[in-house]
Image (tube, rainbow, N blue to C red; front, side, top):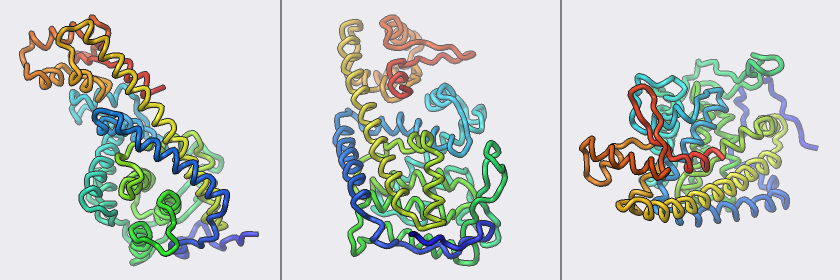
Length: 373
């Protein structure tokens, strides 16, 4: 029977064990689940290359990931508000606070992706940069005196009750974060697979809770970037937050079990299940996008003499399209010409206009159907 860790949830968990945990946590059940997750992720990585521009997934799926990851932290916005915002037609000053936060998450994902591709490793500076972009702050690692605690949500039983107090004290958070980064970046002796290391590291990051706020979102971005860094996936398009939202109780239960009983097995299996199911879902999305792009291209060429493969790809980069995007593609900027283009695309049913005050958006309903399906 696993020994229960003796700790007071109202006191800082400075006894949080350093990594790596015992190799005994990896048994045949974990390895079986790892096999399924690894295969699903490999299939996704191969499928990404079917897209004419794989980065388009970061413009679409990352928006869904940002929305779901923010919802876990009770930050809610609508798809419509997000699609308008990313179409570059809404001034930041006119955006709702929740929309701004979700968009900052997506930008933090992009920033982190480019940083690790350049540096080829994950370090404290890159993590802090991601956090600062998410929260729009210049703050860094939380100072020793900050009495940060994790409480039950307002909708839960015993709302406001402290359920966990992360490590605290001069140099303690920095020490544990340094250990976590060493674990991620070093090739350890027992050759733990990166997928399993990702699961272990995600718990450790959330348990360290290095920032005053935004730890969950920063940690979920870190998951994706680590998989990219390890070459398991070429682009950070694994939609993990959707699975976590749908299985939120299990997420927190299994995380607490590691803290209280060092029960790693179910936590690792949970995270591997998240990878497997998310990879399969993303594969389905890619298949649907590729198929729909092909169908739309064939139809567009039949209905519009100037319709092209390049235009078709642009129309699938984001759900809401502004006329200026089409104009930039063809090098045409006159209002008359752009109106003609949008009218023909609308008449063919490829795009649908939507008025919002003085603004007119042109919606790719097929792409929205796939993304929100």
